[in-house]
Every structure is written in C-alpha cells, then in structure tokens.
Length: 467
Ligand SMILES: *Cc1c(COP(=O)(O)O)cnc(C)c1O
Image (cartoon, rainbow, N blue to C red; front, side):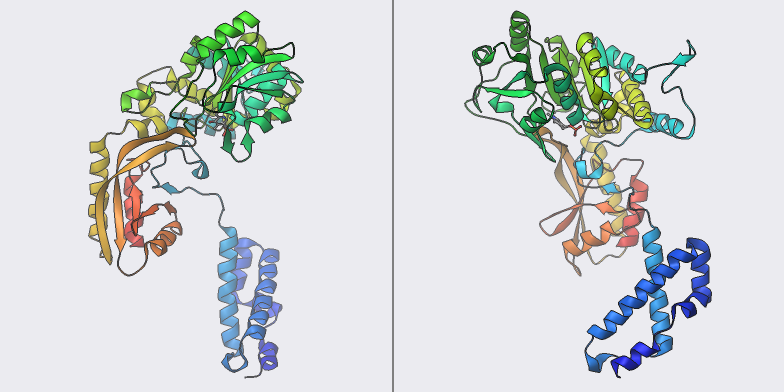
C-alpha cells in the first residue's frame, strides 16, 4: 500500500471526538485535554507510517481509527495517574532515601491529617488570644526528651547545619577535624555547606588521627566554634585517634568557644538492646557538653523530614532571629508530625511499638521467619513457573546511618524459570503498588524486615496476582 494513500485515510480530529468512546473520555477528563491528546496521537501515527518500510504498511480507515482510539485511551489514563505513590519496600534497607526514608506511624499520621484539613493554632497562643510561635508546639517536648535548654527545627538537617553556622560563625573560623570533612550525598559536603553559610573552614588534624592538641593549636582570634561531624556513612578503621565530645567541650570551656555537633541520625534510644552498634544519642552528646547538636527528623528518629537543633538557649535564640530562619522554617504538616514524633518518645517502651522504624529494628528473627514462610506458602500455591524459597539474609539501617551494621533478616526468594530475575523485578515495579526488590544470584529477593505485618496480606495478594 502506498504511504500517501494511508495518510489520506487517517481520520480527522473532529471525527474522533464525535465517537462514543472519546465522548466518554471528554466528560471524564475534559474536552480540551482529550483533543490535545488526539492531535498528539495522530501525529505519532503519521510518523509511524512515514518511518515504516513501504511494503509492510497495510492500514484501512477503520483499523486506523480503532488503533488510534486505543492509544488515546491509554495515554489519557496514563497522564491521569498520580506520579507520586506508595510502594512496598522489600529491599531490607530501613531508611532508604530514594523510598522516602522513615514511614510515619498512626498517631503521627493522625496529627498531620488534622493539620491539613482544619485551621489550627499553628502560630496562635490560645491562652493569650494573640500571635504565638510555631516552634512552641515541639520545642518543649524536644527539651523534655533530650534534656536540652532550647530547640528549634528547620527543613532538614542540611539546612540545620547551614543555619547554625550562619547564626554562630558568619565570617569567622570554625575548626573541624580532617577526618570529618564528609559528603552525605546529594551535594551535601561539609566544606561547601560551610562556605555557603559564610563561615570559614579551619581544618585540623589528619584524616585518621586528630588529637585535642590539634584543636587547641588551631584556635586564634578569628575562631567562632568547634564543629564535630558524626561520620555517619563511613568508618575509619586501623591506626586512628579521635577526640571525644567531652574533651572538646572542656577545651571549649577553657577557650570560651562553643562546641557544635552534627549528629546526622538523631537517635534517642539505646539501639544496643537490639544487637546494633552503639550510636551516640542526642541526650549523651548534650550531657558530654555539646553546646548545640543537630540531627535529621526522618532518619533513626522515625519522624518527618526535618532538621532539629537542640542546645543552649542563647544560640538557639540567635538562630530563631536569623533571617535564614524564615526561609527554612517548617510547614504546618511537618510541625504536627514532629510534635507527635517526640511525644511518642515520652514513653520509652511505647515508642518501640509506635514508631515504625524502631518497630522494624525490634522485630525478632522468629517473627521475620514466620512472615517469610507465610508469604512463601501463599506464592507457592499460585502456579508460577519458578522456585519460591525462604532464605536467611541481612538488612541494614541505611540512610547514611550505622555504616557496616547489619541486622539478621529472612527473605522470600523467587527464582524464575520462564523469565529472567531482571524481567520479574521490572514486572513487580509495575504493579498497582510497586514492589521494590533486589536481585541476588539470579533470584528476586523480597526482604521481610521492611514489609510490616499490617502490609503482609496485601503484599502477598498482589504478588500472587503478578506471578
Ligand atoms: C544525613 C546527614 C545530614 C543531612 O541530613 P538531611 O536531613 O538529609 O538533610 C547531615 N549530616 C550528617 C552527619 C548526616 O548523616
């Protein structure tokens, strides 16, 4: 068939718009949008014909119409799907930055929901009947839980570091060990953040060894503070030496200089209880004499994305009054979630149950094995051409926390016979609730620690469909 002949047979936009099927789409999704998509699909069809080999093209008007209408329907539906959606995290990495880090628990969620759909006392003092401070909602409970004098929170920990330096050390020197000039990823590098916030980096010591005398010798009349950065995403091992916060705080007192600690992940509880390495807690760091400490809201704290700054009142006040504060402040949803998160920590036992990240850490091997067996059993009976196994495996905290630390886990392994593991993994990512798995030895591995017991039924049901 001649190409020009086919091009002449392509239906007109008006004709397609008058079809019953398209009319339905118009009433659901809007006429203008559907018309635009029709134009786009007709153009694509024209290109398709022009690109095809002469002898292979064979199209009648009716076939073109039905082909194009199908494409239109698909395209309209695709562009109507929200892009942002829930997924199942079967990677075994608890704080997966690409998967949104910490999920929130029920009380945290309810607090956010209420702040969303109603007016609130966000910046209103109910007892005085006039303007209040948005920090008021969470500052007190943070102080109660951490023992700090004062607290404030901003958009994330990266902005917390920037605000601290801008408020405490603008145009002045800040002394940092060469072993702590870290990059967190996503362009967060201590030397660069420092430059941006107007502080001058004064390096001291060596990559593997820094002594208190190094800090002392680096002090001069331009010095504004000491900064310690918790090396949260790597470890220096071997011939090493490091200065404790206590030692640095003593030096700070002698020299009348504040000690700032970027703690990275804000742990408030003892993780050793569950077999993980000791991670310094916010309370410990403050007890050892740090003047200001900052940490993330959505790492091990298990709350919303935020940067929490806790410490001496005079420094926190300087930050609250800094012009950057207005640019970095929390919105009302996060304010609500943050307060709810810290309130969970008022009850030391309940937080292990109510904060999902802590709950995941606390899950026992038996619990994980039972869940893996249950899911494997469900998948076994669905007639998939492949082998379903239960395997001992490992999961990690992730999110740049506790490098090298792993927790025992169990995984459901799927070894496909009629497709590759890669192909199966792609299919799982296309499910209504996409499943993010990992591949090991040609098997798709579904780690159990990050699939909660509330989710497991839905998770197994969806996988059965897919297999
Ligand atoms: C994760 C981390 C940050 C950045 O925190 P965000 O909340 O992701 O902005 C900064 N410093 C350290 C040491 C960290 O581990």
